[in-house]
Every structure is written in C-alpha cells, then in structure tokens.
Amino acid sequence: MNTYHAHDDADLHYDRIGTVAGEPIVVLAGGAAAHPSYLDDLAGLSGVRPLVVPHLRGVGKSPLPTDPQVASFWRQAEDVERLREHLGLRRIVLLGHSAGTRLAIAYAAQFPASVGGLVLVTPPTGYLVPGGPGVDQVVDARRGDPAFDAAYAAWQTGPEQHDDDGLTDWYARIAPMSYASWGPAEEAHARKLRYSYAANRAYFSVDPPADLAGRLARVDAPVLVVAGAQDTSVGVGPATKLAELFPSGQIAVIDGSGHFTWVEQPAAFRATVDAFLTRLRDQT
Image (cartoon, rainbow, N blue to C red; front, side, top):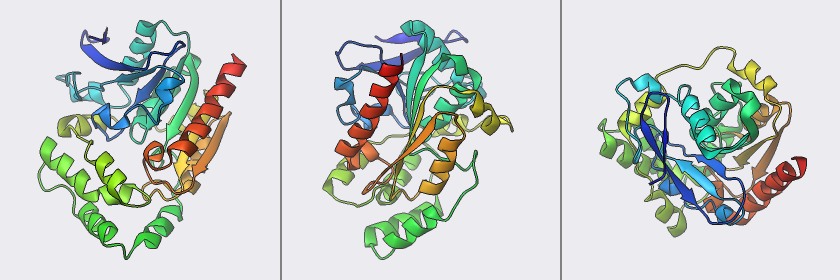
C-alpha cells in the first residue's frame, strides 16, 4: 500500500499510476473532495511521467481528521510537503484540477522554494482575482439545450440532502454544465465522480490569508493555467488574470472544452501539458 506519514501522525494514501522512469507529477483532484479515480491517467499522461495521486483528507483511503480544519485546502499544503519529502523530491511538480488547484496554490504560497512547476487545470479564481463577463457569455450560449437548462436549474437549487449520496447526486444532475457538449462520452465520465460531503465542507473550513494573491509573486517556478473555452464555471478572462499573478505564469485556452479538458479534448490537453513539461525538463 502506498502511504506516507502526515504531521499529525495520520497515514495518508496515494495512488501511483504509470511505470515509466522519471520523477513523478503529483496530481491533486478537485471536487472539492471527489474521489481521484475520475482523473483516470489524464489522457495518457502517465506514459510520459509517473503520476502520484494522493487521496486527500477524508477521501478514499485517507481518513478525515477529528479537527476538520486540518483537512482544509490551506492546511493540507503541509500534507503535500510531507509527500514531497516521502517521495525524495527536491522540488515538486504539481498538477491540480478545479478545487485541487486551491491546494496547489496554497502549497506554492507556503513552500515556494519547493515548487518545480505548477499546472492549474480549470482553476476557480474568484478568491484571487476579480471576475469577468466570460462565464455569463458561455452560459448564455448554452441556454436552450434541454440537458444544460435542467442542469442549470439544479445548480441554482443546490443539493437535496447533505451527505455523500446527496452531494454526489447533485453533481450528477448538474454535470451537463461542466462539459462543452453533453453526449455518451461525457455521461460516462460524469458517472465516475463520487464525493465526500464531510471532506468537502472541511476543505473550505479555513480561509486563506488576505495577502494570498500577493504571495504568489514569490513563486518563481513556471506555471501553466489551462482553461476550457466553454467552461461555465471559470471564465477565460479570470483564468488569464490568475496566470498573471505568477512571475512565470502562462495561459493556454483549449477550445471545445468545458471543465474536464483531458476528457473533452485529450489531444489538445496533452499537447499543451507535454510542451510545458518539456520546457520544465529543459530548464533543469
């Protein structure tokens, strides 16, 4: 079993995907608190670099702590640092998806010297940069599609029950919002998503410091922000502003994609991320 010892003596689990040689990429799942199996192998990225995918606190095989604040995205940065030490890495390359980018950013802000590179895939931005009109335009373009309209109505209503099944059911009902189009492949992927309600609540139990955006100016590692052009939760404009917070930040926009870029446009996702990883390798 792949486990590492956390600062509070908890044994936390991680999956290791891929058998190729090389230092791993540590992949942080979103949700918040979705089981990381929905990531699959990120469109075959495990064939380029091995992937280490931690089960975040309260998800999968990692227990939820007695103090829920330990499972906040801000505090779980300490877990990522312990994982880096466990893996024997001098600097860590993190790939976060959606809410997982909050943890990646929290880690970079607290341990900037230990970051070798960041890939932030469809990151939420409202807690760091002002919003913009991009999301409203994407939503308006989707209106009239029955699946989208039903999902949007469910999103406005919220979960019907506050437990794992209720949260998972709600995300299933709003799933058509998360993809640029809704077909069999998207439906199959959405069915993989399972959520922990308690871990989801704990993830947001600690507010990051007010100067978080300013701290990111101290992160000198290369940063790639990947946005889906049709993502109804993250506008391209705010994602671009997020990239600009980092001295070496860059934005890549994948057309024909919503929130799950590696599922919807796998070739474009891989071309974008592979090129970034090649640049990281060439700089070391």
